[in-house]
Amino acid sequence: MNAASTLTARLLAERPRPRGIAGRRYAHWLAVGTVCLGAFLGQLTASVTALVYPALQHRFDAGFAAVEWVALAYLLVLVALLAPIGRLSDLVGRKTVYLGGFAVFGLASLGAGFAGGLGTLVACRAVQAVGGAMMQANSVALVARGVPGHAMRRALGVQAAAQGLGLALGPSLGGLLVAHASWRWVFWINVPVAVVGIAAGWFLLPRTRPEAAPALPRPRPGAAAGPAAVGSRVGPAGGPVVGPEPDGGRFDLAGLLLLGGSTTALLLALSAASGLPLPAWAVAALLAAAALCALALVRQERRATRPILAPGLVNTPGVRPGLAVALIGYLLLFCPLVLGPVLLAEAGLPTARSGLVITVLPAAFAVAATVGGGLLPRGWSDVARCRCGAVLAGAGLLGCALLPALGAPAVLLAGPLLVLGGGLGLLLPANNALVMRAIPAECSAVGGGMVNMARSLGTALGTALPVLGVHLAGPAVGGRAVLLALAAVAGLAVLLSRPVRRR
Image (tube, rainbow, N blue to C red):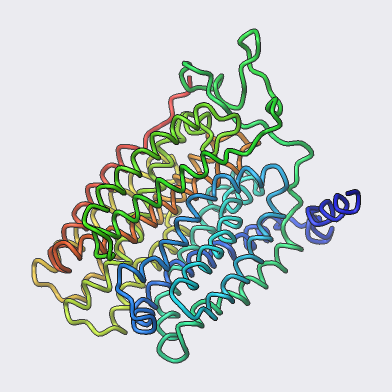
């Protein structure tokens, strides 16, 4: 037992940075660069997968609604695990979990490339998502707590730019790999990136393992959310009690299962309505199951000692609307990425040119996330930046919906996509900064995991809704209806972005 404990301690021990690196003024930017590798890898995987759908349909003789689960399986596991892995990271160390994520991701990518059937490929993608969750649950926290406060917005923008670069490179890289090599290389290409990420993180990330487990916020029953309800428990005299929970912090397995059940049932219902071969009554049954699981999840999280979703964090002023805006932002980003190739193909644009037009969206997102904020007035708050970005995103979506109806050439869609990507590049980094400032420092990994969980849920909905719209009304009408609905959702993001009124 002592030998096992010693081995576990050695595995979890985090290596500090070499003194020659830690003492540099730019050491925190080296750490940000390492985090950007994980952000790049995650978004490269998200955007490159859509390019292999036709090849997978041909290879495995499957329909589009079935092949879609190569992406949805990854996203479902990601949504379910981001928050609990964020909690685990607060306990054992963010650096340890982050580097382990690279290892799991790389090994699962290797297995996915060797998959001999669609079921095996989907299973490998689910394991790949475990590694992705280990990286993403820590990425925002590693950036937010590893750089000086005045540089946080810029650092988060650099991270968002790395995500945008992965998104932008995915379509062109995927097309080249599928055309000149094999769909298997779409997954094998992740392996060398994962190896580089492990090596860089080992030397460049600072040690993060805490000496004691932090207390997660729990809301006082019946009390309004506010500073007194955040980051504390209620003692016998009604005052806050700081420290570990009396039961030692049991893992909220019931919450995890209910979260996974609700999201899985919802996406299965959307897939069934989009052509997945399930009985007609399955859609209503799955929607009912999703609603019941969601209601049970809310009840469970209010009673759990260490809840997955940490209601105390969610009820902190500014966090709940910030999570909603994060979900909306990635919904607005991924819907056009999935829908765009369908609309351009319907307009008769060749595949190569379609890929270049679609690339404008993530490329504009990456550029705006990096330098776009500097083009705005220096005195603008993050709330103003969020609203400006949401308005631009809505305008870009309206342009994407209306230009084809006016008979404009398909290549002109690059203009609205440029506006949409630029707006999202302003919206998401500013919103991330607002959320992370509202979250207590000792719960930063859990909070970062919740931000990434909201992003992943938005990505999953952005992957499923275009398929549903095209299936119900055809590419032209259905696609236009989806884009108009997204423009309205962008208006909702404007309303949700508002100053936090501290109590």
